[in-house]
Image 1: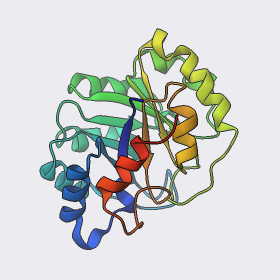
Image 2: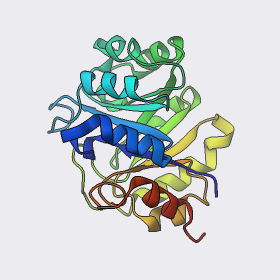
Image 3: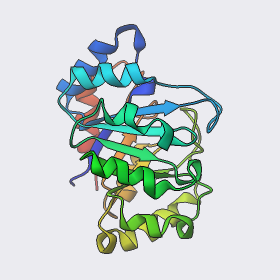
Image 4: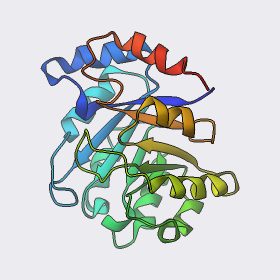
Length: 220
């Protein structure tokens, strides 16, 4: 089964971020997921621009930058200027008056344009934007905090997105409360990748390489 695993770096051990990145990189992680929060779009703060720049300097693997901020168009260049081709930037459509304008800036910079869809955001709301993005990040929990419970009604929205992804040319990714059962169910259906946090990856007292190998060896 071919699917990608992304490390949710807001869950990493910040006492030694460099070692965390190296261990994940050597352990076989596919990309590094960077959560940027402004305390307004979501009621929390997570990683900073400097954290992103640090991780970008420590690995050649792609970064997935998830902007949970109001009006990302106002600051998008700060992130674009410190990323490289192959990196993805996700914005939340509700956070911007004209999200397609912000997405076009990401496209013009040679980066991968993406949208993140909250549990309460309908398929119909984002349907037209699916024509211009390359990555869609489906939130299985309300954004802003790690360790939340999966919201089961998200599954039907994932099925609708999967039904149009080939026609519209995007890939689908899972973020939030990602257990082995979710990967076993949704990877065969066509979900391309899964953001791993405290449920499966961090704080387990095992080498990351062992954990990632065991996930890839799940019974499908």
